[in-house]
Image 1: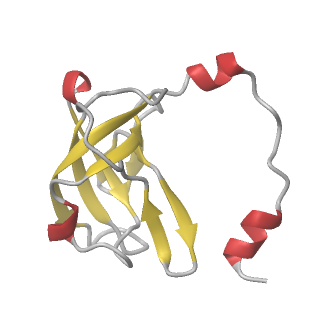
Image 2: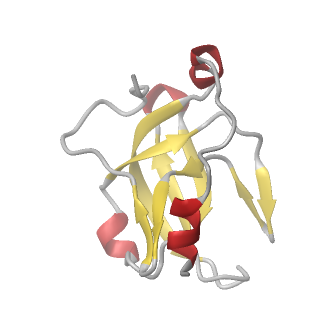
Length: 122
């Protein structure tokens, strides 16, 4: 069974309340810059995103299998911005870039039409 099939086969986990979900600050932002991250253990990009009123934040994202740096800049993505910062080698990650694991690589969560940066998922 592939990793993806194993993820699908797993039980969904513990139920959470609506109040738990409301704690997650998941917002739209536009990718402003992408750089190589050669120090990462697994291939990754350093990605900077403009989250409007929440400011510009950076993260490390293991999305190189499906996305080149140039095609990411200007794309609007969905990020979780209220996790604690995480040290990834010499880089400090400030948000979680959301996506879906596939056998080909992670498919990032994008918007089907533009919204203002910082718009919170409803």
